[in-house]
Length: 120
Image (cartoon, helix red, strand yellow):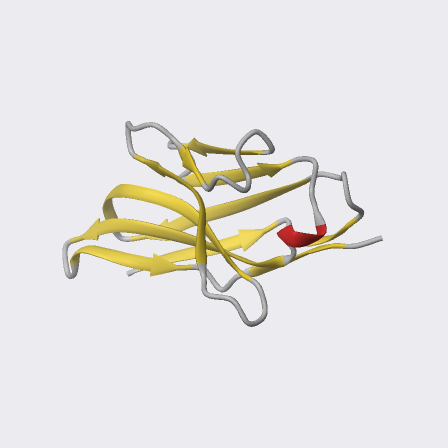
């Protein structure tokens, strides 16, 4: 079993910055992929940014140049630095990971979500 715990959400004014964190813990043999998704009211959940282990980060067009995803593999932690935030970035942000455990093999895990609100 793998647990993902997000932190760092909150209320910020347009143009401001926030940094989200996602800590993975549990009996994982390896982490294949970690990424951030978001879901605004009435919308489908969408990929914001992702990073495969040993791979290259990729971003949604709407956040390119403003958001940066990074990972600290030693701590099994992923970050999302969000700059130049816009009201349309308002959503619940979810941490996602595809990880391998002995009992489930490669499996998708989700965090509980953290609210990001961009408003003046």
